[in-house]
Image 1: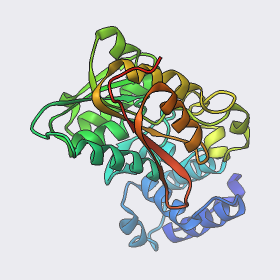
Image 2: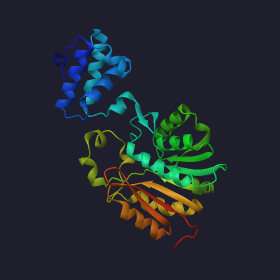
Image 3: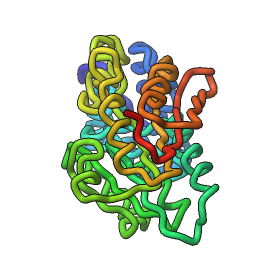
Image 4: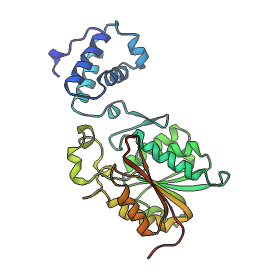
Amino acid sequence: MNRLEWKPATVGEALQAAVSFFMQKEIGSPRLEAEVLLAYGLGVSRAGLLARLRDRLSDDQKERLGELIQRRLTGCPLQYITGRQEFWGLDFTVTPAVLIPRPETELLVEAALALLGQRDRTATTWIADVGVGSGAITVAMAREHPRLQVLATDLSEAALAVARQNAEQHGVAGQIRFTQGDLLGPAIEAGIRLNAVLSNPPYIPAGDIPSLQREVAGFEPKLALDGGEDGLDCYRRLIPQAGLVLEPGGFVALEIGYNQGGDVAGLLEAQGFADIRIIRDGQGHDRVVTAVWPGEKKV
């Protein structure tokens, strides 16, 4: 978009132009994205934006909105521009250091809460969130389970900083221990015993990453996407580690790729886990695997 193409006089004209640009670039939900982006740029709510369609724009406002629209047209995800994403009914800060929380990950939270619901909720329960990222899973779990204590690990210090910010924002920072480290390494080194291990690890086969949506392939952190040649590298390392730190009767809840249920279930079975269940999303795709640790490591 060049300056000659961007000459809106009013908020309504800016909205109309933004929708047109987004449609040309085949951006999904062009009207919704245009409303969210312009509302952010003008510092108002979407309802406030729609109430101001006849308002005239200052030169500074035109320039700012033009810059935001141009950034979105390059493929930068809307969430990285606004710095916000909703998950579990909560508002989360997101930056390019973390994956953008997806609605399907709420299935992992639901599954974990259901399994924890079978435990004594008056006792302190220790879980790990491996690859905490934005902290969406950890914060949602802590909000729903006040006696929960979470060991949140990530290789990225920048991601941990975002997760800490979100935990503080939602009043659960006191329930979470943030630790930089590889998978369950920090728990193993500290001798911590856990009642559950949760993770949304990298599970995209490395060769598939270039073919993903440009918003994902070009902007989201590769460290949080790349699961190795077949997408299963992290599961091969994480599942044996889980057997070392889980208390008998503890469980794992892992997000997986759309066709990885059988493979991850096989890894769990080979390690000695029991009661293995594959949970599918609304499209019928594999999305979460849960399994219980009986307490006897299979040799």
